[in-house]
Image (tube, rainbow, N blue to C red):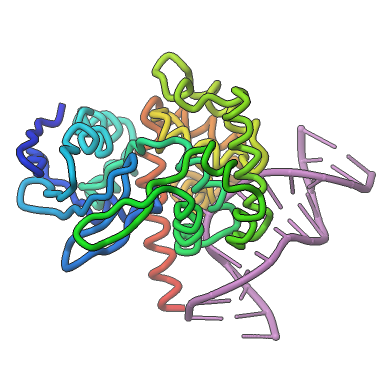
Length: 296
DNA sequence: CGCCAGGGTAGAC
DNA sequence: GTCTACCATGGC
């Protein structure tokens, strides 16, 4: 287990990790730059400012968020053992872990916010998805810190209270607002219980199946929510970058599996921590893609 | 202008 | 079950 210590507004982590690289992993769309090297984010209704310091991270907030951040950054998890296990079984991943030694997968505290965010991410850019999520967040109550005003993410009940007209006025495009409302109704009606799905005794396959009951939630979106907010580390979200990374690294001279076959291949190969492998493959492929885009 | 952006759905076969 | 048109819009 990673040793850490929470002092007043600081988390001392014995294993240095890169806050900016982790937050920019685009798993949580609600982080933005604040002042100097500080970042601003809203976690479980708490507005906080956070930055990297030597040996850990430092934050400012109106209350003690040590436990919340410990969970968020997965400091309760033996990441060194997981990485050693993956490196031992896969040469390619070993190389990627040397290349990106400080990458972490976040454990987002609000699965509902994550669900809305990834509904918004469909056929969308990362940047505009963030804009859309912040637009929805304005329906939540205000939170303030050091002169900055942001909003807690609205509950399903608050979104339903706002109504179709107000959500439609956000101009999310692609009928996203009605997909969000339908998901909120499923939660209100008890057809979807995200808190239950996050429990350890609910398996990945069950959580994914339940999530896909929502319109606008297919394989990729369901896997993303399962991995980033429901603590299902074997989830393997496949977008065009991950599909390309697998094809390039593992099937250079033959046809790569696709769709469901690709997810099953990944779980067979990477095991219960396929999600870590997924993020390494995604990050590397995206970085290579943006580099070649600059050249070409 | 053309192309792409962390896909999913409904409809046709 | 598999394939396809379509969805809407800003940035480059």
